[in-house]
Amino acid sequence: MNRKDKLTEVINACPIYGITGGTRDVVPLVKDMLSAGIRIIQYREKGKTPILRYQEAMILRRLTYDYHALLIIDDYVDLALAVYADGVHIGQDDLPPNTVRRIVGPNMLIGWSTHSISDLKAANRYTGVIDYIGVGPIFSTQTKPNANPVGISYVYWAKQFSKFPIVAIGGIKTTNTDIVWQAHPDFICAVSEITESDNIQNTVYELMTGYSRVR
Ligand code: TZP
Ligand code: MG
Image 1 (cartoon, rainbow, N blue to C red):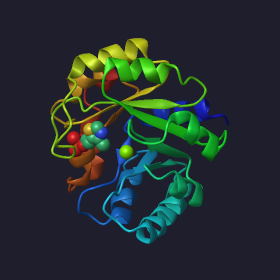
Image 2 (image 1 turned 90 degrees about the vertical axis):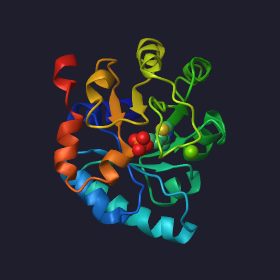
Image 3 (image 1 turned 180 degrees about the vertical axis):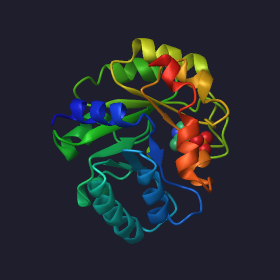
Image 4 (image 1 turned 120 degrees about the horizontal axis):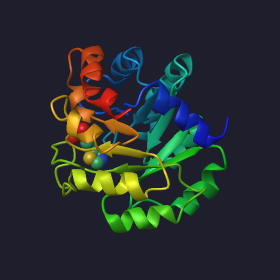
């Protein structure tokens, strides 16, 4: 299956994009996300040693295979290759998308974070190179405290002009998904709302509030 079809299949199965983080043990966290129906998991663990990241990501590789879910590695292109991940997620300060594509080859998904309309325009020049974009942070968030919120209007812009599926992220809670879904993102991603939830199944269900009205 090509990269685009892989993503479309996941979007149709469950439009919630899962990201690890927080203080909970990452393996049980991801098990709960997968059993709640999430089909794309980004491993985003910045403060750990390379060996621990490798060990954890390897376990997640097996788990995500079992659930027919995609595994995306944040930041570390080498780790993504080492664990046979489905994709790698990079930001504006990482290696340029063309370079990452050259390293990972034709099969791996590449996600790119964007934070402004000029980022969005730049992203559109990478057709055939990147596969989806992150748009955010929409609202202010403790998970990324130094980033400026871009507001919901950016999601509308991105949906209209992006050549790629968009992942809305940043400050999304079960209480505000309604207005986010109205901007028609392909995925929404709520990091702390899920990692801090004591009932992930229920939280994922609540994050879908407002989705049925836009689909
Ligand atoms: N990129 C933009 S905002 C963000 C990332 C990784 C963090 C979002 O975390 P939360 O807890 O959903 O606000
Ligand atoms: Mg990054």
